[in-house]
Image (tube, rainbow, N blue to C red; front, side, top):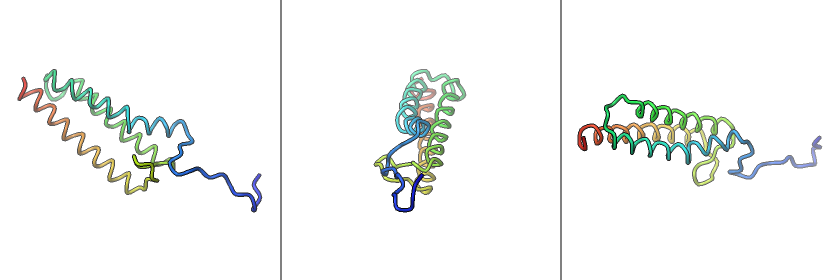
Length: 118
């Protein structure tokens, strides 16, 4: 029990206290981008069309990354890549940039793999 004179335990900014939030952060910061890069490489190398298993896998990883960002934001422990507390504005802007950027590089990879290097 806490009395009014005792300060309640507070977390330092950027400190993650939940395994779920840690997993979400690792997905959108590290594992997701690495997976997207590997999938893009295969899309360029294979050049098998615009609706392949790789394209579906790319969309699934992108959706997982967006979900992970959302989970972290909803936890109240979200931070920017620099470790500052993330606001809902950071989340909206970052998610929009991630989505648009990922679609742009996916289109570029398909153009290269299916038309330029085919």
